[in-house]
Length: 291
Image 1: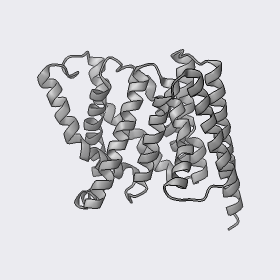
Image 2: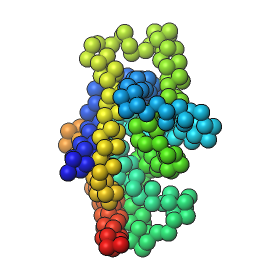
Image 3: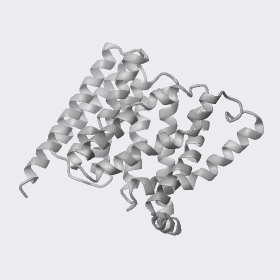
Image 4: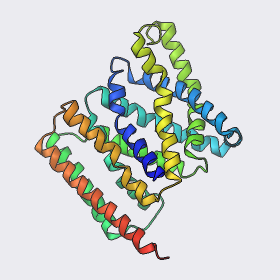
């Protein structure tokens, strides 16, 4: 029960992220991501110290292969964060939620075409429905939902890279953040020298929000790591839809973003695909349970 509560709280907090980033809408997205790297590293190093797990971080840093894997995964994660923060700050919370609804199906496609995994019939049907939903929205809007596709693609690629790493959620994120923080810190120092950086030039409320970005980033991951070790993978897979659902609700009912009939039809096809995907996973888990 504690595992379910931890994982649910993790995804619920991720779903509330737009509320946090909306408070920082006046600051450039690139600067925000740089701050997120710097202050996340400070908080993550504290967590690693409390866990006594510096040996795993040290081993990862000493390995060339590990450095290469985590540098690529860190770059993909940074791209995902950047697109997400930019989308939220430009009034595209609904499209951001679409991106994370698509992630499970993108992972299935990556498993088929990159890892050459076998797909079951319902999985193919789920992917077809989701692709139809994206195509419908693209035709009706006259443009592809590039924010959603960028989020889903970057997170799917990040997931593939993280599969190559034996490190846990917190330790892996620490190594990734450690590799890119020198660039982020250098960028922030450059902004400060130019007189355009946020620190020292914004109000107290904004300063506090910037400085707690590390806590905002790391706390859901700690909850995720706790929950993932204690509940079944199929349960975790169903709970992951909580985050984009909360984001979607915020976009439509709190921020009153436009949600046309055509976009609703596209979402309906994608949700139908997700329902089939989830049903297929549950059926497979149930058939394997006696074994």
